[in-house]
Image 1 (cartoon, rainbow, N blue to C red):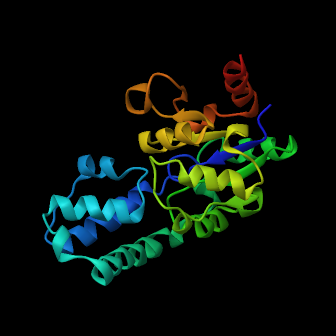
Image 2: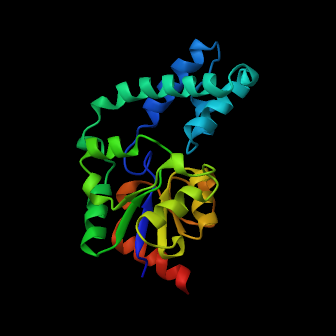
Length: 222
């Protein structure tokens, strides 16, 4: 039996992807760079710094923003994003997630957050879910973002476990690759063509429950 579940945030617990997109689009527009929803798919699951690097590359402005200037751009984006997410409430929890968290708690399975978002603690508070999480991996403390395994290794460590004792839940390919690289067992939310045909996938979060996670784990044990 697995001992922990490591959750991504955006697209798994709640959907703040639209706010991220709008905040990035506004910043890019200030720089004279146009990004659309198709381009935004490349940013899914990436850290703030990696997302900004891709945007600057698109606008051929990488050399213009280094060091403090780069940090300032990230801060501007985040301030805009934080204003947008003030409206988040428990009603924004994705279907089935609250019930799954309660099931895991009742089964004494440890829960941790493994999100690239530095705003994870704030969002969990607004959703009323902070008490469900025994550990939150701080993305500022990892050397490399997803698809590197660092954030999942840290999340497992935060709850006193090895990643191999845990399941990880993700909705982005970079996140799935991070889970696999960490040694945890991946569960995807979405479509096989986006996440890979070699993992267990549910179409929506409402299909996630303890019994399903147990089935996934048992298959991996065989």
